[in-house]
Amino acid sequence: MDESELEAEFRKFGIDVHDVEAVDPVSLSYVTAYPGEEVNHMEMGQMLNGLLDLARDDRWEPTRVEATVLRFEDEVMNRWYVETEWFEDLLQYRISETEFSTNVLETLDEDLQ
Picture (spheres, rainbow, N blue to C red):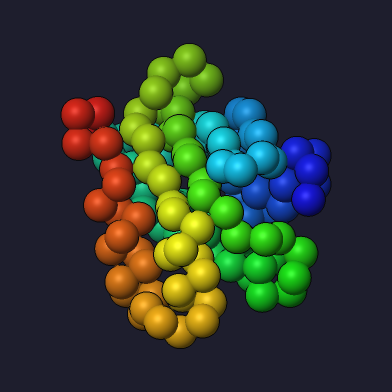
């Protein structure tokens, strides 16, 4: 899946993509719809569930995803990431959705909160 296809998929998930690179790792920056003090976990979940659905449909090969959340186009709110293994473990039922979510949430950059 190339950048334009991945960007289109993220937009279907309701994500306001600022920039995306569909290499390994996938590098994504997006402008949050919730520019409060903390990153909106539901927004993160929408994106991750969309990627998991693409992987289940064999339309996307899981790889590390590095996301930068922007409060506005020029203001970084926070960063988070997902390891390839976490996607694979969830898809193979080796970890629960709760474990997957906890792993991702723990990657939020504490210095930016």
